Length: 484
Image (cartoon, rainbow, N blue to C red; front, side, top):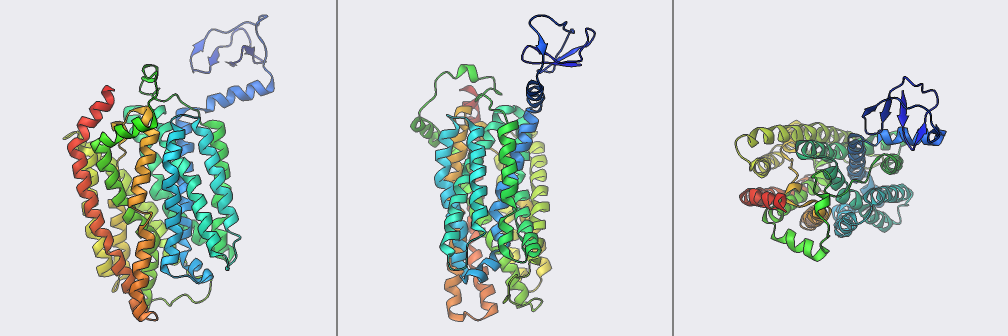
């Protein structure tokens, strides 16, 4: 067989051979003529490369990159106790690491959303991956006298990861349509629980293998370089709206100000963004502080001792990471199946399933604090069910394709601004303030962090109400986007 490419003939083809074109169609065998010449090795490689640039391959690579994004984000959480001991900082300073990361992430998100709607997206993606990988690797060499440098490095990493989170969903949205798009975006967002859990696990394993916490920051950069290279080589740059067959009908591009006005009038988009902020508040706080809370619970139960020498025990980070991976994936699958079944009953299934899952999760948040003092197993079980409950549906189809990168970026901005940009630091600050009276008491260290985390269930209930509001306007906004 031969591959027809660049008007050349691959050596070894006979007149009886069939030709496979790059589009996958069959054509009669071609005889050698003056217009055809033997393919050079570089042309053969290019033809093989083009065959690998399928939408499925692109979606797989983009999902892999998203796993690395979240893995790097939570690697620090997996070794947070070691960082506190190494730099001799309290809860508020430790929470600041995640807060500066999220602040830079949310500030950069609208900028990358603007760029992603106007310039080559895969180049922006790969540059972002290379940037955060380089900064993360350098941060592993910071000495104990320069904690502010570690804080600054997390700020820069947030900028690099913002480019990926803002733009990559829009490429998948332009490669697939309807149910395929929903499935591929669901796979893409599996990276949130999977990458988060792997971050805890990677941080713990790398720390134990290397004998110090900074080894945890040297694995994800290597994987990031691989992901960035794969994006450059195998991910195509689809025309915006091409999957919806509307690329030819969108001849003019609206201004950024016009895009923002349209999004502000999109009621389901606004309410779902506020609901996402509530989820971000809780997950940001829990992602950083629940492993620490469980460690302090075991000290109170006298099943473990406080960490005085590094490296600290990584058992709780490993367990919590495994729980996050398994139950997070389970939650996404259950959410997708439940939504699909509910769509047979109502077209408002997407926001309604999110609302029910959030309101239900508030119950299990409270259970963690009730049982943690007496039973660490009960706390793990409650956190497992909680992670299953936390799942969201993508709402890209209420926004027209040429505004999707801006919509994703601005939703990321608002959800982080009102959510996890402040929650890790706020919880740490409240915990430190409560600890001042009994700074040396292990029981009070445990209780103070628990009291601070009790703010989360109230925010979660508020988020569930926002999703119920989204359901009221969801169908109208979706129809408007389709009509446009």
